[in-house]
Amino acid sequence: MATASALSVPLQLLSSRRAPANGLSPRRAAAGALSGSLIVKRDFLHNGTSHHQFLPLRQRGKLQAAVLPVTPPLLDDEGKRKQMSEEYGFKQIGEQLPDNVTLKDVMDTLPKEVFEINDVKAWGSVLISVTSYAFGLFLISKAPWYLLPLAWAWAGTAVTGFFVIGHDCAHKSFSRNKLVEDIVGTLAFLPLIYPYEPWRFKHDRHHAKTNMLVEDTAWQPVWQKEIESSSFLRKAIIFGYGPIRPWMSIAHWLMWHFDLKKFRSNELPRVKISLACVFAFMAIGWPLIILQTGIAGWFKFWFMPWMVYHFWMSTFTMVHHTAPHIPFKSSEEWNAAQAQLNGTVHCSYPRWIEILCHDINVHVPHHISPRIPSYNLRAAHDSIKKNWGKYMNDADWNWRLMKTILTACHVYDKERYYVSFDEVVPEESQPIRFLKKFMPDHA
Image 1 (cartoon, rainbow, N blue to C red):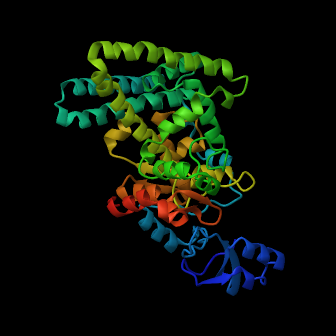
Image 2 (image 1 turned 30 degrees about the vertical axis):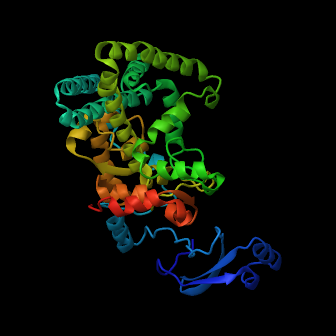
Image 3 (image 1 turned 135 degrees about the horizontal axis):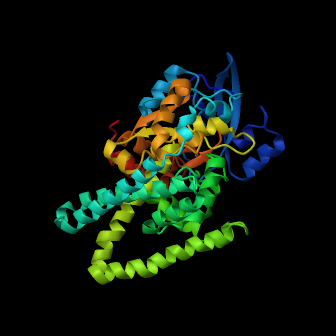
């Protein structure tokens, strides 16, 4: 892979009629001229030798500054990694895992006890979630209006713990009894109106195809063709991957889990049972809430904690696998060990959040093996850090980290990994410029 000698390289804008040499045939140059395109010339050094590269630049109504692909981050350069860590809001950006290391190699270094299911600890996590959520509802019922946001934050974070319990059940790491796991998982998801089996099927694919283009069912970068499809969709995508990205899991929930066409025929019976349970909860639970507390009570006791839950659902998911140096790759280039170890971020949050959410943020070991129960994730993390620590990405949750994700990680680019909306469609990227201007930059 060619690497540039520096992040900034000389630029020249050349008419496509003047650039048939250096790899562009006259026919392709003529085609570029007819389409009104320009050619960008990049000068760079590789292995001590000067090279030239000509790249097409599409015009959008008027001439804009050329934006060159920046070569992929030099993860084998310690100074560069430290610089990126500072810029992106990380404590550490790991070295590139060697190609010959397999996921089994990493898994084999884990102590066997981290895979053991402990019924006391598993049901203890249920007790923590039930009592903390009940306490949150109590706070909502007693709090004056100006303290309601704090009560909603607690209740929504507590109910996120329900999701993590169902998450363990889906990965067969909650109980040795699989019927118990199916029942507990379904019940844990009901207050979130999340269908358990549809989510389980799609989430398994996320683990099998983490950060694989097209195939990963958690997040995908935006494609250029989506940006170019229509003005309405373009504006919606810019808002969705910008200001409202911490709630984009709502769109993911709607798109992925209720459409029967997205599931195999052998999955449909279990999918339909889960959907029936969710609709039954909505048909019975919501009217009971409204009957007891009114529409305002439904908003106050259910909807606002649910929005806090989706804030955490979106935030955890995007922080776990999204950063300017973490690539999405095609199936031909994808490497399981690199995707799960290099492509997953360990992020520390305030301790009360980690307790209520059962350490879901300790995410690297979970991607090395989903069969590790949530209460064993920290022990597994310590082992991975001891044996593979130099390859790990580590961060504390901070404003700069979130700002980087919300303002930079947008459109897929093979060489740069991500290109920001305000580079691709600057005339319509006011939401992104607003975030860049007003979001704090504290790390």
